[in-house]
Image 1: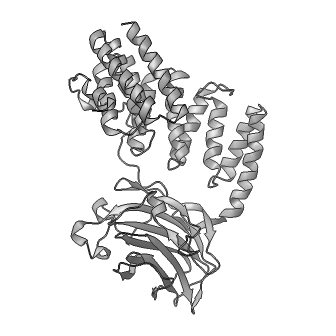
Image 2: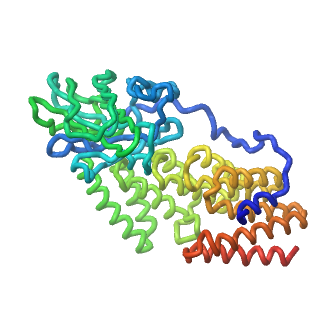
Image 3: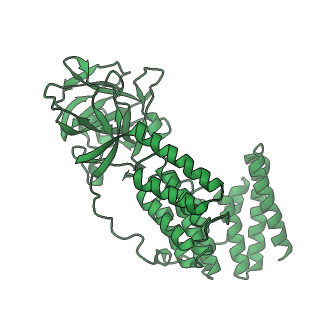
Length: 459
């Protein structure tokens, strides 16, 4: 039996607590917000020279209904969530069956310069499921004779403007333009949905529109659902200009001109809210107002909390928003002295980002705050949940030590001693085996071993 399992088994049982006692205190888990309005401004991307669409909003992997194996194209993957593939209008960060819609910018594969490798959406290979790709396409004119042309690995279903226009139930490798069907384009915005089935092997998509046998090259691709009269910003130039202003703002921050830097970041957010650098500008502004680690800042924690809140709401789909939410909790605890609000924020993090690699850390921090308030059983249960729910996370080590700390705080020296011994064995095992060649992790574990020895010496 390895040290981790020994640590888990050595944890004495705790009484179950009422789960409601761990609920947020001010409605973080309130009813879902009403549907958001379509975007008044969008970034747009060009097709390739041959008309190929390489920029998509995509989600993966969505499992089939087992009853439809061999006929997956007749199954609506979104029905179980109360949605329909015919009315999809997703945006980045929306969730379906625990998966997230991502913006994807493909650059071709070894199979072809305009092939999209759909395994990149899920971040791994898989079998017996599907990837769905959506693009909002602006056409400067009506094209009643347009033709969809594409191919996939494996089966392909095409939905255009709410109508299923093509389905090819097949297991194959793709060949350019092998699947063609009439696909009339409206003047203005069109919604294209490609459902790509995956049996086994590769997982690819290529797609474009033809008119008179030639690729249509003046379509503009948006990845946010646009209002009918949405302003279209060419993405490359928009991001270039925003990037120039970002570099100037960062230079002010490095020079210690923090008030000027905050003003410069605010100008970026006002003028280029859709830019790739916008979320970083929002985060840099917040940390310049008040840094959670105590680095030089303007020491304005209330404004920093407001800024971080705004970042999470506006750019919640971005990875940086996850770090911002943890910083928000830290500022509420350390700078504003509001431990209850900090605990609520940590709990809200795990609910909002359940698949995040940082979710375990948020839960461990929740346990720490519960223990500080004397809610030892609640804290213990939270730590045990971390160990059960996130077994591959390094926070398992932190949770194991924290359980010992909780016993110590509760005055139960015998159980604290047993748990510290279990934590010591586990840390030594990780140091020698799990992270035997990782110098950084070994240093972290050596610090834990030293702390555990001190705690054992004091019992």
